[in-house]
Length: 205
Image 1 (cartoon, one colour):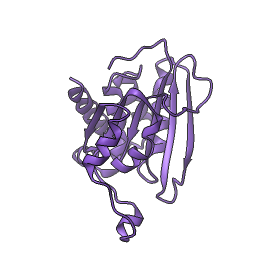
Image 2 (cartoon, helix red, strand yellow; image 1 turned 30 degrees about the vertical axis):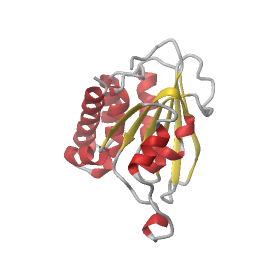
Image 3 (cartoon, rainbow, N blue to C red; image 1 turned 90 degrees about the vertical axis):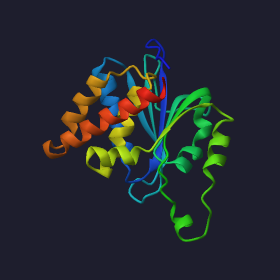
Image 4 (cartoon, helix red, strand yellow; image 1 turned 90 degrees about the horizontal axis):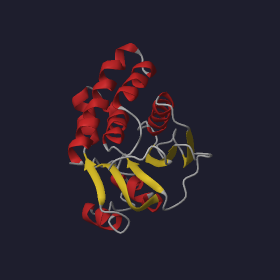
């Protein structure tokens, strides 16, 4: 899963409002800029303040003229939750990579008994119609290991770098994380980034 620095890398990030999807996209973009790459960021749709479905796009490379990622053109689909990832599976290119946290966050409709959460095997089976490159792990577990559930998005940041698909170094990402968060949260978020990086690096071997 090595990146090609001369091409534009399309990354779609999906999750639920409150999980830090927007913050992740912003930090990823800043790290890309720090590494000298052209970058575009966009929010396709979402209700970030209401706990609704959120999708952000990050395009890195010389041909990134706008933020829109067409269906079937994302090199990497990053999902904070299985069903939220499944919602946007059409964005990933054939043979592209899915990076997904396996921790389930039930939608309100499921919690109220108005809908059923799909079986995990069915979720993976549907995703496999688009790609068999799925890196899956419990990002919340790693966030808690780092010291806070709120660092889940930084676990995903580290994992994105760890895939080797984006032309961003772990060092650049950590520098941006350090500059972004207040001093009292810096250690936790850097730790979460490193744990995510280690997990994705190990999964791709």
